[in-house]
Length: 119
Image (cartoon, rainbow, N blue to C red; front, side, top):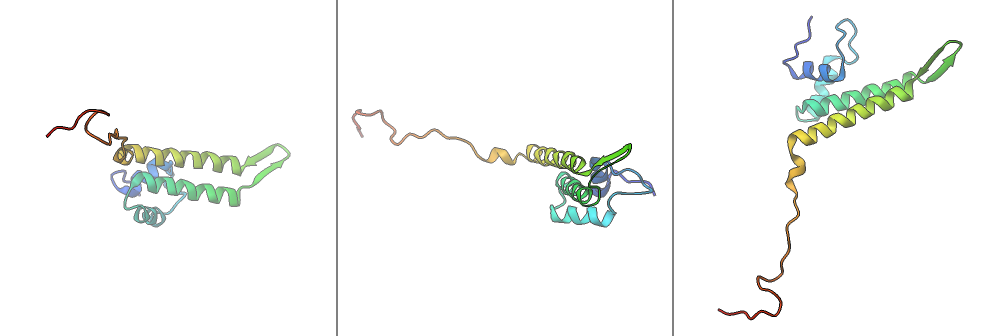
C-alpha cells in the first residue's frame, strides 16, 4: 500500500523519513497516537516520533565495536533528538506563538517631570 502524503500520518512519515513501505519504523497507529497527543500538529507529532525512535536506538543499539564493525546508537539518537528539536522550533515559528509577548514602554505620568498640570 502506497503512503498517502495528503494524510497527517503520511506527512509525519515524510518528515521523519519513514518511507520504506515494507518495513516502517513506526506503525500508523503509533503515529496516530502522537497526532492525538499533539492536537493534530503534524510537526510536533513528527518530533515526538523522532524522540521515540531515538529512545529505541539508545536502548537497542548501544555503542558497539567488534573487529571491523562499529555502531554508535547514542550518536544516532543525539542526531534524531536534534532533528526533533528543529521540528519543534519550526512549529513555534510557523504558529506565531512567540508573537504574543512584546515590550511596551512605560510612562508613569502623561506629563514631563516638574511640568504643571492644568485642566
